[in-house]
Length: 150
Image (cartoon, one colour):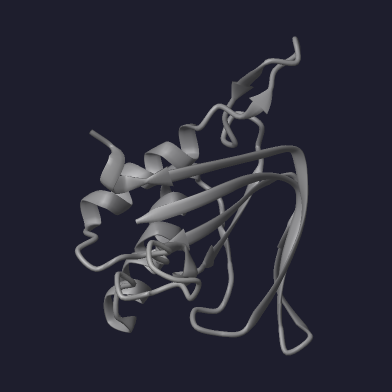
């Protein structure tokens, strides 16, 4: 699984012009699921997301997690994170997990993150044509790939 984590002042998701979810200060997390990803990947990424120290402390040092700042999280599925760009100019998505695995692991990620954080996680609509808006704070953007954890 691959995550793109962005520290945001606010973020929202709309589908067909309708607001689906929005958050204030916190994290926008784009979630890509690949073939072969497992629940162990979900668990590892949940801990990384909740514990990632990318918010400023009183000294202005990135030393606090989203949990420690009472921040919010919006998680949006994004299969294009699995793109291979090695050959040519048209990305290949052959590594993207099929619908059943992808939606299951995305939902598990969101649910487990809610459990760890003790508060709701905003979500997009899996497979929908979503319009994601955000105000990146910093900017701070972190990429995490569960296949690179060791």
